[in-house]
Length: 257
Image (cartoon, rainbow, N blue to C red; front, side):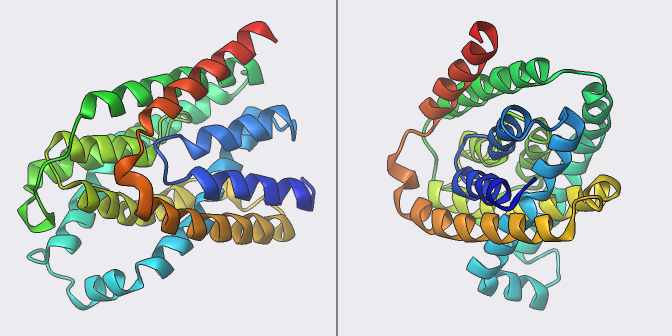
């Protein structure tokens, strides 16, 4: 991967990370079809790209994270949400991760791309079905709602299933306030990104340092900018339709190419 390819991959990740469109899927499509990586290597690169957007979240919501550090108690709503949801994420994410890594062995790019397209369509359908958010705030969430949200996030380890889309859908279905749901989804991305970086470290450490730096800087920059834009427009934009459109385009690309 050269410098320009790394910047483009980071731009794709950072620009659509927060949309209910799988950034992992789109970076996979780019890496498979334009950089010509094999599926397993592309998957590890797609996982690593979350590191830059994770840094963007930490900086953008630094005050919230400082409060979490100062209130490492289960009676503090945000601390409790992140802890319980993250543990629940592992329940679904770990088995799916090992199945995914195993399935990617020996599979060609077309098969993997077809899977991505199908999952994009599924994400769009889930977002459409979620309906309108309610009025619950963070301190009104039950442990059960936190667990459900975490389990949903774990499923997003599959390329094509949007992490932000699935977590937002899970929160909205449970009648969490829309703005609150968006913030929770942002914050939940940090422990999720840390976890996948540790789990896939064996493959990620093989990424050349210069490439890793460029991937991180690019995804951080575009992620920070797009996050601020999304905070202003998310409540008014029907993002679910983009998932279905991209999914149809992706599947059509495989079937017709």
